[in-house]
Image (cartoon, rainbow, N blue to C red; front, side, top):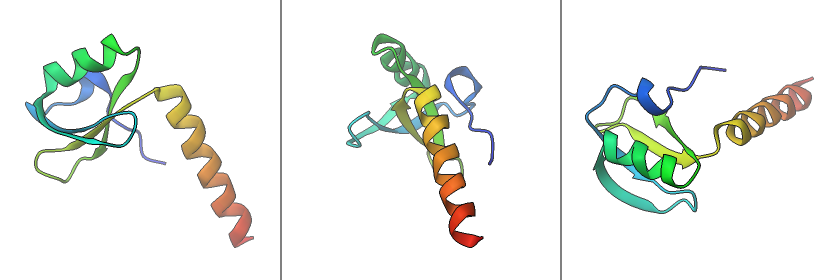
Length: 80
């Protein structure tokens, strides 16, 4: 599983922001998106690095990691 870039690790000046409910907020400066995440007690996670601008989501990073690991485990179980 690839390591996600989060918060200040995101190098782009602007990001396409998806909020915690999955709604597209639009293109925002990265610094503003990080501030929004912190104000909500969440993290800004880059989910699509190849897009221009990169797509980022507002999520709880620990919960996000748990869900990703669970999906990976289910995929491995189905293949076995």
